[in-house]
Image (cartoon, rainbow, N blue to C red; front, side, top):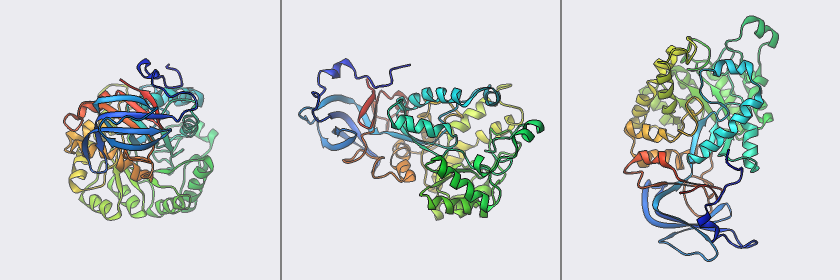
Length: 430
């Protein structure tokens, strides 16, 4: 594994500032993506002081005392954000058995590699939607102990009994009896009062947001992948309590009725949204609800469902049926004018392949510039971090990703990231 501190290329070492001098970096970009307006501007220099952008200037501007990063053949963009990852796990035929064999430490050490892989793919921020290990990983990255993206962590997802995020799904009677029925502390709530308690427990745990599983899911050990699993009153209790703590709510949802209840109750995002229709599109536009499509996960599980033994037999038909539909749902939602932000469900698919989502979006009819906006300014709007992220402007965090060539002409270039800066620190470069 690479060293835990970023290593600058030897060609840059000669222009590092002397000890004690202001830490300045001038990044010369052949083109810069203006995420606010969805267009490219030619020949810009981004001047970085510490972890912030000090200025963005036309041309190849020289800055006294600054180290120079020459990306004149590249397009520079704001660091990308993936709003739906599971950074502490990754798809494998052994996944279902590992929960009984491995300890949390095993998953934590794996997560270190997943986090670095995600960062080097150009994703400087992620929203982790389910898993308590991500809370500790978030803190370790923020403290500079390991390399990875900035993490907004939901902690344990909130489910109903037998719901998609009930941690005891698939257990036999003996094991279930020994462990007892999970409750709000474990993220399982039935009724409005328990829903409020589950949110408060996430606050106690140190979560940054709330995730609920409003419908069944594809990979849970249960038959239904789309039936509603919360009443509207329960979702309202979650949303109202979350607002008390400054949280937004992400709702995993495949089926229409579960989405309808979640939207009316005021969730911020609908994740997956497989069985959306015109009524749901209208409700989302009316309530300002964001859609996070996760096409990558849909395509991944549909493909793996063809392999004997990759998923349990109770899961396999759901993966084949639901996964294959998400890209078409995305296309219809985009045409309908629903607000869309970027998310992959990485962990269900492979970490580091997150940028494939851009390609899938463009295949489904979205313009390349708009696809890039979903992972920059739109994602920042979902997170409420527009003052910090989403555009390359003075005062923003110095998160920059660059690819060779012009991604608005060839969106597949997003798979060729060769420069990544987060908080003013270079983690990858040509």
